[in-house]
Amino acid sequence: MSDPSLALPAKQRVRQAFDQAAPTYDAAADVQREVCDRLAEFLVQAGIDLEPDTILDAGCGTGYGVRWLEQRWPRARLVLVDFAPAMLAAARARSARTSLICADIEALPVAGQGFDLYWSSLAWQWNDPRRCLAEAGRVLKPGGTLAVATLGTDNFPELRHAFAEIDDYAHVLAIRSPEGLLAECHAGEWRLMVWQRQPVRRHFTDVSALLRCVKEVGAREVGARRPAPFGRSAWRAIVARYERLREPEGLPLTYDVVWLVATR
Image 1 (spheres, rainbow, N blue to C red):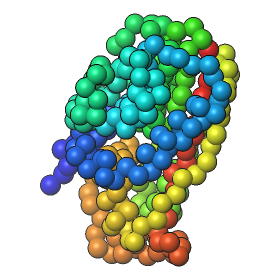
Image 2: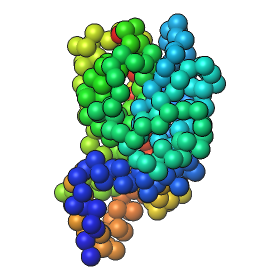
Image 3: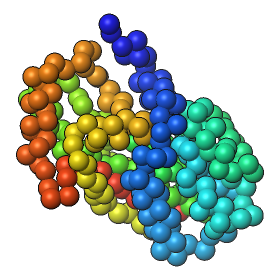
Image 4: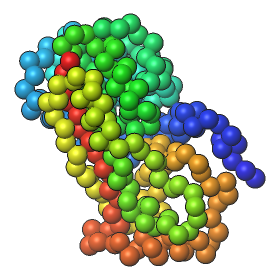
């Protein structure tokens, strides 16, 4: 039987994946927490004189970043945006005093020039970063600050290796070049304070555990997906190719992470 979700537009499939992953997300989101923590560190290291009255968390997920934002600026008004209702419900459980909006971060339903800080950790890669950047510029006040963590094109190279030569379908998310985002920042007259691109790696005991972790954080939308599951022989070939990459710590999985802090 074919998967009915294959008929959904890409954005709807992404939303569905994250809604379904909301109950398992926090337990599996070790990398996501590290990336968010490092975004906070880079923002502090940027040395910006920042005392925001209003903060927008674009693509907040279950709201992990909210705790740091509230501790750092306890008097600021926080607005959390995510297009997955179940993720927003989880974020509400972390903080009752934030405002929640269920919306697409490429088209924010908020007035222009309303925020002092635009914050987004690991959400832009599911969208068009150029549109996200344009929306950030629209909703920020003059002199506002942008703090973003997203992914680069060399994300999950081990998975690409394992699935290579198996079929012609994509098995990892196609992500726009970070260099293109950097060019958009320069063209938009952003003042770059931080631009860092570094790998973040984790290790797993086997391929099943690795894929389960990816699924449990909702990161399973890849665009043009294979319409039918692999047979046993294909899976054996995939596992064998991945096993060739095994390290003493286990099977590696690498995130290509980009951190950006800028002002207008």
